Image (cartoon, rainbow, N blue to C red; front, side):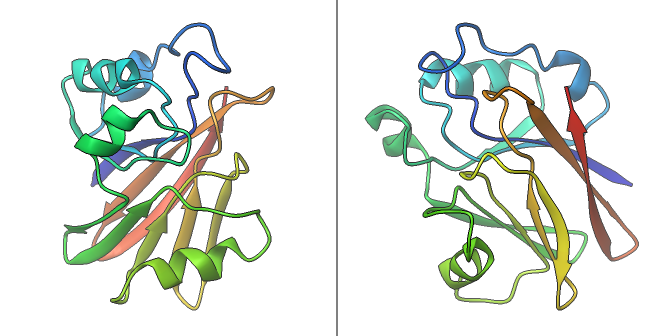
Length: 158
């Protein structure tokens, strides 16, 4: 089984004064998906220090240096499944349609952030997964699991 730590909307240092310690959440994962609004390049450096493969996209609040080094969207193949990552845009209402429209090809899972609202649901057999935010009153992160051609998620409230 493949296990992936998913984080988004850390907002350091504009909303949190320290980068959250994610080391215990990253111990047994194969990779980290980071979905933007780190705000500072320091967060990306921290995630890379966890010694896992980091797949990251930039968000609307990220500093220009992050936007120079990261892409707006990426697609990754995991055990034959296409997993599509982006930050997202606009309000929570209709975000699923906007996320789907961001990608030209069909995806088995859309993984995004932006709204700070966790989401873990299937629409037409496609997973829509948002880990929530680490910079809000009820912070959360997520895990994705891939095994035998299936992908599913779990939200963890801190």
